[in-house]
Amino acid sequence: MSGFGVLAWIRNNPDYAHLTVVVFSSSTRDDDRVKARELGANDFVAKPSSGMKFGEVVEELEEKWLGKARPR
Image (tube, rainbow, N blue to C red; front, top):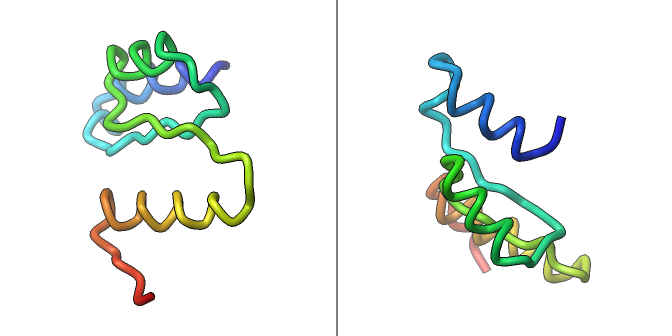
């Protein structure tokens, strides 16, 4: 099943529809971002190409969606 299929399943399942869903994708295409939003994603984040940037993205997501700010 594709990620979009999983997202549609989550949003159509009453037990999981309330979950915050962040699509973390290697795609940077605008049509994928639009489709994710149309299917009910709360956010769409393109995977960074470097490991260093990956850590920063994870920290930003934690802060934004989980309210967890890490000390710097």
